[in-house]
Amino acid sequence: MATVDVDTTTESGKAAAAAAPSPPAAACRRSSFSGADLALRALLFAVTLAGLIVLATAKQTVSIPVPEIPGLLVSRPAKFNHSPALIYLLVAQCVTCFYSLLTALTSLKLISGSSPTKTLFLLVLLDVLYAAIMASATGSAGGVAWIGLKGNTHTNWTKICNIYGNFCRHIGSSVFLGLVASVILVLLTILNAYCLYRRSR
Amino acid sequence: MATVDVDTTTESGKAAAAAAPSPPAAACRRSSFSGADLALRALLFAVTLAGLIVLATAKQTVSIPVPEIPGLLVSRPAKFNHSPALIYLLVAQCVTCFYSLLTALTSLKLISGSSPTKTLFLLVLLDVLYAAIMASATGSAGGVAWIGLKGNTHTNWTKICNIYGNFCRHIGSSVFLGLVASVILVLLTILNAYCLYRRSR
Image (cartoon, rainbow over all chains, first blue to last red; front, side, top):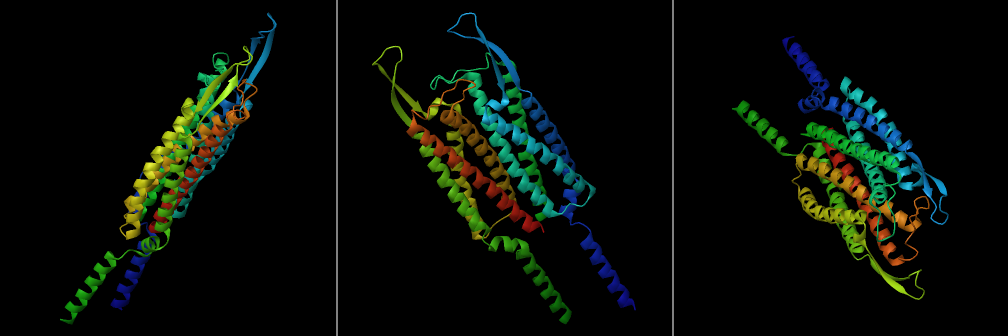
């Protein structure tokens, strides 16, 4: 009878040990990882939404004199959709904004306790994809914005930021916010990969 | 005596179990993960080196007629270093080429059997950083190359690829190779994160 009792205790002990998280997993869950993940995703949402709004409102119309006809002014608008690179940045920010919202919900689940390793791997997979997309979109818009700011004498591409000052400020701010979003996505990838690493030790 | 024998066997059994890799770790090591990692790094080296050479040799000189003086031709060269975006792509490809060489040695160590989890995490960390750098450099050069190919009527930036055809082919090829390198780096991040995931299950 005593033997039966001991056996039962051992079995229940084993079951409890199986149900309880392993020390590294628990450390990963209990620590501030999930909180940092949620905070970064909330920041990503704010940054991409701000970048989206700043870029979508990048419009300026200026009156430029026509050299051939003295006294005649022509109204020339500048919009973000005049450049494919800026459209690409807008789409990337829009998609990343939506993605950050969706994954913030997953992050909330991680905080609540149910954090399967598979979810962490999927987050790493998606984060690195979005990081590459955001980085390329930021680079693309940044390259075009640089020509607008400085021009290129070799190709006779004149700078436009001396005329479209307000428009360029919008573009510059959006590119900067795109850069911040890319850095956040890289940090998120590293954070979740570190959590996987802690669990695999 | 018999009890001592049994104890010794159990202890040695435990020691052997501790020395042997755990099933997921062994699966990760024995499988083709390390081989795929090395193959991708070798491909990354080849792609970045090719992109580097193609971009560095992007030079073309054409004779352009001067509209003010009929019959007069002016020699106008085009080089990759005329654009900061192309210089950025060259530097990114150069650094990534060197990085791929260094990490290929680490990958060889992984194949030989000694694959600490810390190394896998460090590879994920560095791969995602380089993926973001390569993606932004490719995007930046791609944005400028697109203006060279199509021009922009809104900003009066004329296309140059109708004149500098050979130069543009070099730039286009290098941008394409940069894109391939970015994809490889994203795949490498996912591969090593998957290996961490397999070990943490």
